[in-house]
Length: 382
View 1 (cartoon, rainbow, N blue to C red):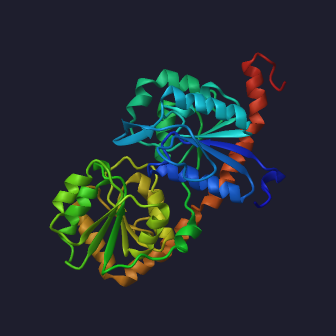
View 2: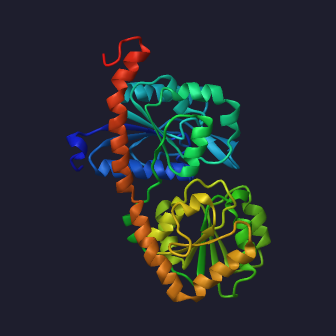
View 3: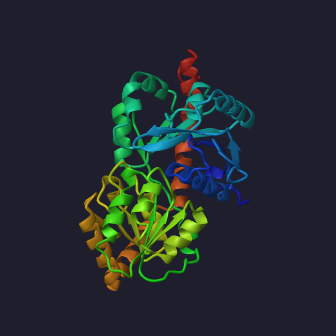
């Protein structure tokens, strides 16, 4: 392992993900990738999270199985049970972390426990955006608990706005990162003609039904790869049972996702809302794939319309088909999107994000003794 160079000291970091690492998801992917990157920089990182199977790497402490729970138009695989909290307490006690990094800090489960039984400076990253009922319902409790957070960060303006409204306080604006090199070096999956890739949970807000409607307006030689699964999978598969152009791939590994992105001509993200940050767009850009997506604030944060991606009104199948057809037919336009996307993805590299977080960790550690002393009744600075 390379020697840590950040302020000349190796940092022992505990990262808590409230969602099962056995279920594909944006937060889960960010936590694992950030941990991998920080390890290559010489720091010790252990991820604490629910797992519904073997942990995905040796640096994970599994906290038990998850309980799928409806949340923000999706289903969150969280672990609010007592056994998971006891495992969390044990891990925090035994590992003696220099800093604990909470992702989505008020998702029920181990993050609540880490706040309640605080053992180290706490850095919290808010990922979600939109109107989340739990924040409104439990706002007084959330605001009281948030006082134990030493540094707060949000991955987008939308996520920061949500946190400021419901939680209060100041937030460092960060971003979601992408492991650029792994996408650029992946082998390209072979295709049988012009190919569009969709990769996201099969639920209404991800807009897969809109993309399938758009396929009816595209040429007969255009193929669609549909990765992942979800509550809409079976119904949508029945809709396309007689369309040989649509290939249902099921859940795919991160490595396979990179291969599919490298092979496809266009990556399509037709979401209807609820997206605070478009990390999947950055992954496609890093893979060298043209992007067509919905014109959502969270997506526009990373993809500039007409430069890095073509953005269309959400829910408009005809507009989506037109944009996809344009990218597939106009090779010069597609090449321009790819070239700009490559540069854009580099701005959001996981290495850059890790350096930003290391600065936030140092900031949290610098205020930790004084803040805890004031809570115990000691004078400031003692």
